[in-house]
Amino acid sequence: MSMRSFLTLMSIFMLCKGEDSECDNFTDLDFHEPFIGTNLDVRLLLYTRANLECGQELPHHNFTQEPLFDVTRPTTFVIHGYRPTGAPPIWINHIVHLLAAQKDMNILVVDWNRGACNLNYFTAVANTRGTAMNITGLIESMEKEGASLDSIHLIGVSLGAHVAGFIGAILGGRVGRITGLDPAGPMFAGVPPEDRLDPTDAQFVDVLHTDMNSFGLRGTHGHIDFYANGGLDQPGCPKTIFSGKSYFVCDHQRSVFLYLCALNHTCNLTAYPCSSYSDFLSGQCLQCETFKPATCPVLGYDMSPWKDTLLRLGQTRAYFSTTAELPYSKISYRVDLVTWNQFLRWGVVILRLHNGKNVIEAQMDNKLLRFEQYTSSRLLAQFDEDLYPIQKISLRIVTGNVIGPRYKIRLLRIRITPLENPNRALMCRYDIILEENAEVSFKPLPCH
Image (cartoon, rainbow, N blue to C red; front, top):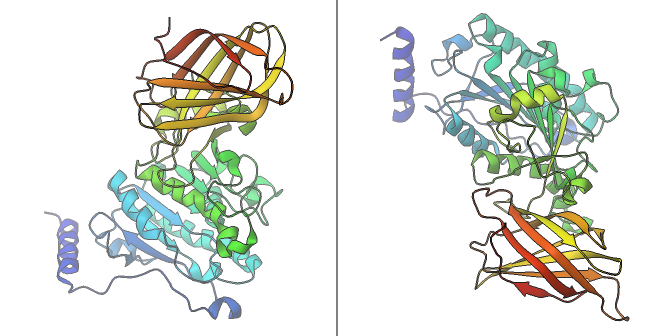
């Protein structure tokens, strides 16, 4: 056994016996410190599979003496954002455990709370550069000790996403990956790429947007940008200021909770490359033949199935919708209609699926559809729950006609294709006559 291995085992043994020094915790500041201001101090808390419950502060200039830190392992840096109250982020322990479950790695939680805690947001923004320089110095030292920059992953939240971008830029874009969770918008909107996160900062950059109309940054800033619910207001978040603090932070924080859910494999957040959220909701972007294999990108840790294609494409926008609560995933179907009715009608489609006891409903009302003689329409139906098997389907076409006679609409074919469950059979029905604003029900048939 090598001396390094022996020291590692001894360190683990002493931690278990409680004979080592106490755990090093994330800085927790008093409520008065945001008012008086704090000086930037960057701490690195090391977690591995051997000490998931007990962080150890890693000395910047003497990290080789820490037996738990192995530079030959992949290293992931977790970088928080603006902390106006000075309290530790509630999600730190969760992301540490979930990252450790992905693979054997060093997890370094970047604690720059003394630079991010200030009622003056502009001071925190100014401290992002100093924080980046501090971490960059450590990474350069790690490289000299044999670490591969290819295996370094920077995960930045809000302001932390730009810290990650600055680190990557200083290192010439050689780090393996940067993940930006709703990069901060204020003070970073409209600035040149060198002053914010951008795709040249790492070999691969993925970004998740959840609050572009407030604290988040609009636009595309990675090789792939995921837009949850269009990247704007998130379902379940308060809509009025009377909800207090949650009104301001809920949409912005949703990026972290979606990412945690994806890491935990609780959510299947499949995203569809598209030019806009409106086009996605209209069913215009539901195929991913560009990728090999022909599957759409999924938010999460492992991006390897789509990485090469995304690097070749340049910058890709990908959209998905969520529910208001865990597990956030919606169940999606592609609905193809072929109509043959005598009179031109405009309306929206309401689709209900039955499995005997339960019913789920999707309203495809993001825009009016044109129903006329031999018109083919493609829609996206999204449900908050998954019912299977489907025993009955109900369909209603709602028009603006409330006082006149009900016109008939003839469907030559309706075909319903499961998107997240491609192994399930397609459901079809042929030659259906229905009245506008009236529901018709039928049993699905196998598709020809």
